[in-house]
Length: 524
Image 1 (tube, rainbow, N blue to C red):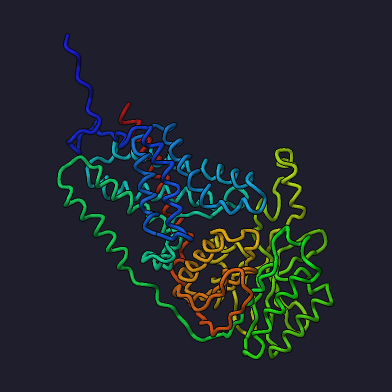
Image 2: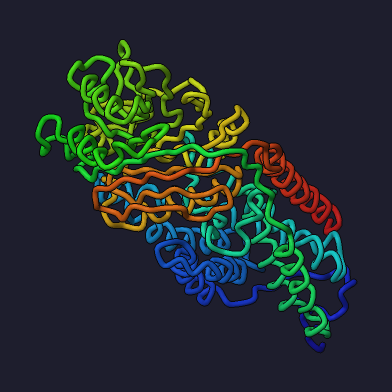
C-alpha cells in the first residue's frame, strides 16, 4: 500500500482550514539568533545609540520564535533576554558585584521567555481562527505588539515595584519616532515599534505571491506613523534655574573614604559660580549633602550663606532624613532658614536602597545583603514643590523610569521637572547616558523642560521638545544657569497614557485567550 504523503505545513491556499505556522528557522539557528539578538537590541540604546538596531533586534527575536513549541519558545526568549540584559545593565555589577547583576538579568530573562511563549502561541492560534492574509497582516502584528507590551508592563511594576529599564521605546530618544511618546506614552511607543516589526516579518513570511505589493503595507504604516506631528508645547514663561554638579565621591561605599563634610563642601564650591547670576532657584543632586540641614546646624548655616549670596534664591537639595525609626531619600526645599517642603522617593531600589523580605533573602547571600545596612522607607508625599510660584515636579534617580510618578507630577500642575540623581555608583558605564536618554523622552512625553542634575554627571537641561539646552560633562565640577521654559497643559500621554497601555494589554491578552479557545474547539 503506497505511503500517504505528509500534510503540508504551510499551504498556499490562505483560506485552507489546516493553515499552521512552521518555524522559520531550525532550533539550533533560533538559539544562535537569540544569543545575537541581545547585543543588537542593546546597540540601539546609548552609548552606542544606533536606534534602528532596536528594530533589527526585535525582528531577530520574532524570527527565532515563530512556529516554535512552548518549551523551545521559552528557551529562545530566555536566551534573547539574557544576552540583552547581561550587556544592557552590566553597570549594576559595579555596585555590589556580579551576583546582583546576574540575578537581575536572569529574573528579567525569565519574564522575557514567558513573553516569547505568548507571542509564539499568538502565531500558532490566531491564523487557525481568523484565516486569510488580511487578518494575518492587519491584526496579527498588532496582537504581537500588544503581547510584547504586556510583558514590558509587567516587569515594569512587579515584583517589588518592577524594573522598567530596557523597554524598547527607551532606545528612541534621538529617533524620529520620539515625538510619538507625547501622544501615546513610552509603553505606547513600544507597542507601535513591535507591531511595525511584526508586520514586516509577516509580510516577508507570507507564502502567497505579490511580495513587492505587500512590502508597500509596512512602508505606508511607517510613513503614516512618522507623519504624526509633534505635540504643540504650551510655554508661558521662563524660570532662571541653576543646577550644580559637585563631582565629589558620592557613591554608597565612598562615605568611608571621604573627609567629614567633603560632599557638602564640594557642592558649595561648585555653586560659587552661580552667585550673581540671578537664579530663581539652585538645584543640587540626589544625596548632595551628607548632613541633613534640618538637624545639622553647620549644614543649615552653609545653605543660608549660599542663598544669601545668591540674592535669596531657594535651594533644592537631596539628603537622607531620619524620622523616628524610618529613613527617607529626600529632596527638600531650603528657604528662609529651614525646610519649607520636601518629597521622599516613592520607589526605593530593591536590593540597592532597601532589602525587601530581608529575612527570606539573607540566607542566599548574607554578605551581600548585609552590605545594605539601611532600608529606605517609600515616600507618600506628592512629587510637586512650589518654589516661589514655580511648580516643580521632583523625581529622584530611578523615579524617572516610573510612568505613574512622572504623570502624577505633571497632573498635579508641575511646570518644570527636576530630575535629581546620583550616578556615582555606576562609574563611566552606559548607565548615566541611558538615564539621560530616558529623561529626554520624559521631556517630550510631558511637554516639560527637565533639569537633570547628577552628583558626577552627565547633567543637562532639556527643553520641552526634547532639545538639549545645556550640559555639564561627566566627572567634572560645574554648574548650569539657564532661562528654562515653563509649560502648562497636559499631553495625551499624561492624560491617557495609563489607559492606553491598559487597553492595549487587555485587548492583547483577551484576543490571545479567545484565539486559543476557538482554535482548540475547532481542532476538536
